[in-house]
Image (cartoon, rainbow, N blue to C red; front, side, top):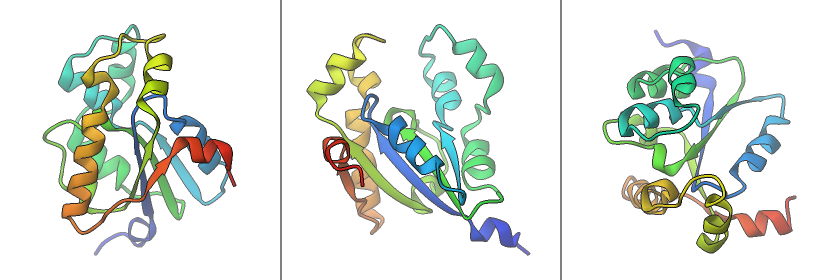
Length: 165
């Protein structure tokens, strides 16, 4: 028999490119008492699978679960104490081989930002590339969700910034 607490959790997925105000939105959700927030739960998996270098790579790999199946099954869709779980994802971190449940379950939305704004901000941190920006991944996620009959709302970060309520 399934754990009733696990069945009661509703998972909300935010998919975005870097520098799209996703962290600000995540902090907004975290103010609610009934929401558990996961900040980029697939990041360790992304680093392990892609081999992308980061100055803090080894630290992240040692502290995060890096098996994508375990992240999806036990962390994202695992049991919890709150009614909701908000997962902030950067689209590029959805690497091949993750369980289908990632998109098939939960509620999803896409947070977009003008790519010119992303580039000017992102290049201060890491040299921009197609992989790093993940814009193609956002399109793939959108298309796959539509094919599943779950077309996600698309929210422009500029609209949120102008009218956060």
